[in-house]
Image (cartoon, rainbow, N blue to C red; front, side, top):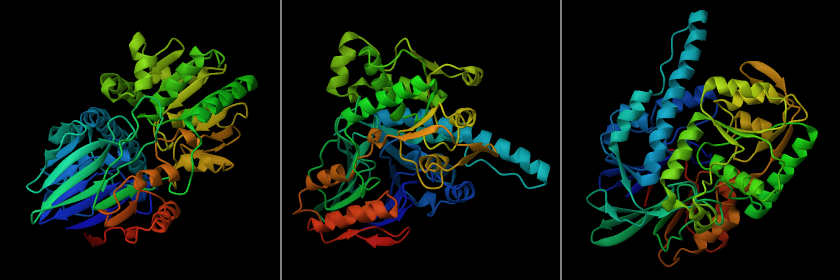
Length: 465
């Protein structure tokens, strides 16, 4: 047995890891690399292995940095099955079509400029049609439903508590009559997040692959975040400004809507309009409504028992139409605008930032992780100007970062999950999906707990298990 880690090692994007077990190849995730445009385009277009050589793929969850390059994988010759949870299938169906549409529109815009400059045209990474074709390979499974995915490997999904449908991947391998278990956290969630259930503790593994996005950071409590969200909204309204929130369409948007719903029901906030301005968020929210079986008990008792929609109330407006989106620029009174993309790299959020970043009355509220070399990271770093659509926009709006809303486990939560594993069985730990300082800090903490065989893999290097 051996494993190669491609992407999401010493960085947090493009998750893609290839297992080989007695000649059978199993791909864990096939995410889109996000960062500098040219580098991203090249890395996503040129897969670091032969797609047709992969026998089966296992998807941990639907976020684009874990699922977004599946259409490219299929386009380049992969013929196997793609396993995921039922909710992940429904989310991926929406998100991959949306991603294909974005690829087409981005390349259309770039090629207009290239024609004027006499440069050769680009091709999209993949199209909507490519996304739709790869979906025929998906097979949905329930949590805790052991399923043989090859001659020697049985897959079980445990609820990761990260986003709807997210799973810890458990692979039980029969090798020479001896059972052997490889576990991959995907993205591990947190306890007490709204809407979805808490992570289910894995009991044991021989090889454990853990994410480390916040391997050296602690989050504020969810209860504190709700109070801080209320403070941000009230302070901005007093200044007569708007609250602009770059929010991932999956998970973060629904959590914020849930909290805002609670705050308005409690009478904590002034009654201002809230706009969810993202066609993808609208479609994803419908997927959330289709899967109440993934909701936690608090959501069931507070909303579902009374037939109240946790993602809909009278002050909330979902904006799907582009013309309606443009009209938001003309609003002069305080309001809240949640828009994608979460890292501010594409989508309608760019228009809202271009129109509102220069006004000191406004607030840009950051509630998600922002990767290096993204516009979102530059906002977090409070650079004096933002380059949007080729124009320099002064950043005068207040920037507030509330990382406590993160759906990723923090350092203590990652270590707590590790502590729940049977140490008599554990032989190897691999630390992935974190910028180098975060991965190193988590690896060091695990070493201090007595685990000797801990590694931060080198990209592409084959490691014997």
